[in-house]
Image 1 (tube, helix red, strand yellow):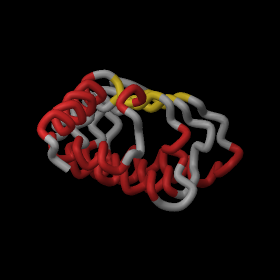
Image 2: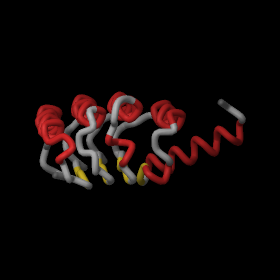
Image 3: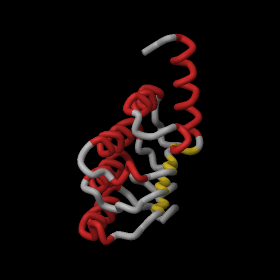
Image 4: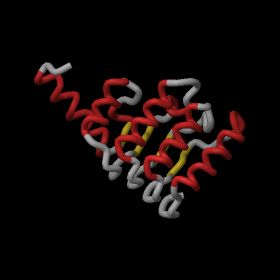
Length: 139
């Protein structure tokens, strides 16, 4: 579904369908790179994942969607509540989304996803921030 101009409204429809499918959904990879999800679209996806939609999802590509730090926060929150399907994701792409270092630190602090699961640039930032934190002794 990459490069299809899916916006927040479209993501809302996709999320609703995923919730409706429930445990019957067999999708293991969802590629939404280079669309127009924004933070509202990320929040819609987060709500679906928190509800347990897409339980077999292993790969999620949200690169170049301008989800920003708020969209990332929604995804992290979704991974911490309920029966979130995000916990099963082994590869998450979030590059080119205007996510600031504070949000990356928040993601790292929640221990939701190991840096090697967040590819490529955000994982590198997680690694760098974690290394810097260890070197400076900052909690």
